Image (cartoon, rainbow, N blue to C red):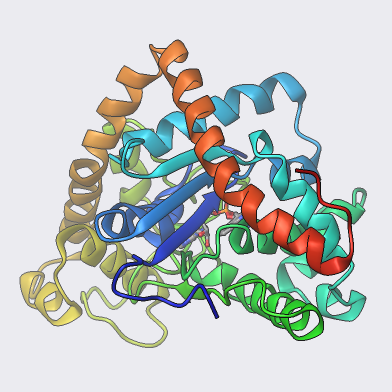
Length: 338
Ligand code: TYM
């Protein structure tokens, strides 16, 4: 295929995040931190997935604000808009257009099997709309438009990556080589940060329990409070083991911040109680996200810069996306404009 990785072509990395609320440290350690790392050696595109957010019917004025906030968050991670393409999904028209074409190459049964669709349909039983159902197809369009090699995501998105590959493969088989098959990039540690109050559940932006999730822009005091009240166990020994979900989660978070492996962490806290450990984890998280918080506060004061950068990002992304879209349109028999 013409899009194989060659020495002249750096791998293409694409990922996106929904602007449904301030990101949690789950989003940060599971995805955003890897975006940062990967942005050095790859051709990266990072998007605010605002079209995906429409599935839950957000209040329009609030959504507009959250899109800008998420865009500023991505820039605050230190992702340079000169070296990476950072854009807002809905500003690149090709996404919705390719999604429709891909809808016609996605089987009802395979979309119906998506765990996230099943979970969300249960949670929002009063609003199981077609957008929610077709959500992974739009995500496939996001990825395939840029011929991405790698997609850095948390573990919960793995199934969506698999369906993106299946759709691409089906299309390629029926219509000829068009899309590169993407690989998920899922970090070893931090791919599934758990709730601080119920460590058997994923930490989520939409958890109703305010102590369950730590948000990227929580104050240091609040972060400390949340970690101090994290659910653990009665063993009082910092070690990674089955059945110690709360401690395992805190150890993973601490490992993400410090780079220490579990053995080293166990040694560091030998003979110390959970109280000391929780404080250290909180301090490490506070230190880790401090630069992001400072940069975010600075950027949010300059909306004109944010909008200009978003427009430039959309223009750059559109140029790449348009090429793939034209190719796909031609392959399916649509008339392609000049
Ligand atoms: P979203 O907005 O729910 O989450 C953004 C990223 O954060 C990861 N994540 C987690 N990682 C570890 N632990 C957790 N508790 C945790 N919670 C969330 C998610 O896996 C994700 O990587 N559908 C996507 C957005 C999207 C997308 C794309 C991603 C739209 N188009 C194209 C990749 C490529 C989503 O809802 O992510």
